[in-house]
Amino acid sequence: MNHRSIAIDGPSGAGKSTLAKKLAAALGFLYVDTGAIYRTLGLFALEQGAAPGEREAVLPLLPKVSIRMAYGEDGLQHMHLGEEDVTETIRRPEVSAAASEISAIPEVRAFLLEMQRDMARKNDVIMDGRDIGTVVLPQADVKIFLTATAEDRANRRYLELIERGNATDYQTVLADIIERDRRDSSRAAAPLCQAEDAIRVDTTGKTLEESFQLLLRIIQERFI
Ligand code: DC
Image (cartoon, rainbow, N blue to C red; front, side, top):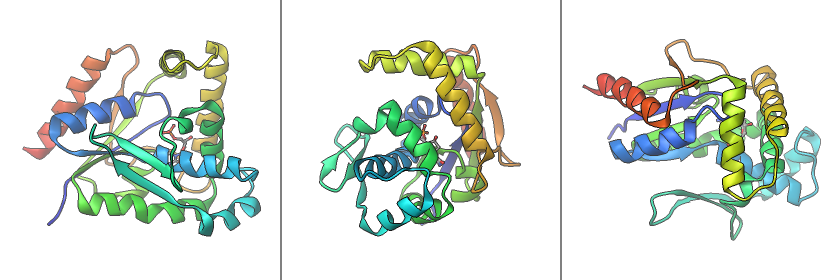
C-alpha cells in the first residue's frame, strides 16, 4: 500500500518540529524528526572523542554505531543510541553543533538515508529536516519550506532552551543560528534549499496557532 507523505524543510528554529508534531496529531500521521537522527550520530561522535566535522574521524564510526528510533506510548519519537535513550541529551547545544557538522559529510547522509525512507514506506509520515523534499522523499505528496527571520528563530529557540533548563543567552543562540544556517546552506552535500515544488511559508510574527491553521489548510487542500 502506498503511504502518504508530507515533507517539511527549513532552517533551524522556524517551528518545523512543533508544527509537524501538531499536524501529525491532527492528521493521524507519524511525525518523523530527521534532525534527531543526525543529532544522535553527532552525540556518538562526541562520546567517541571524534571531531564531528572530520570525515576521516567519523567514517570509521559508522559501522559501529547503533541508532534506533522508537515511538513511545506518548506517540513521540525516542532516539536510542545503543541501549541508551538519548532523546533529551541530543537537544544540548553542543550536540546541535555536532549534528550540523557531521551532516555535511556525504557518506553520513547516504548512511542515514535508508532509515528515513523506510519510515515513509511503512507509515503515513510528516517528516521534517533540511533535504526531505529535495533528496529523501522527492515524491512527497506535499512539500512545505518553512522559514522565518534569524532573529525570530533565535528568540523561539532561546525560550525553548530556557524552558528546558539550559543556561544560555539570546546573543549566543542568535550567533549559533546564523552559523548553522551558513553551514547547512553552504555544504556541498544536500544543502538546505527549497524544493522547486515546495510551498514557502514564512512564520515570522505569526503565532503557533496561526502557522498551524495555515499549514493545515495547505495540506488539506492537497489531499482533497
Ligand atoms: O532539525 P535539527 O536542528 O534537529 O537538525 C540538526 C542538524 O542536523 C542541522 O543543523 C542540520 C542537520 N540535518 C540535516 O542535515 N538534514 C536533515 N534532514 C535534518 C537535519
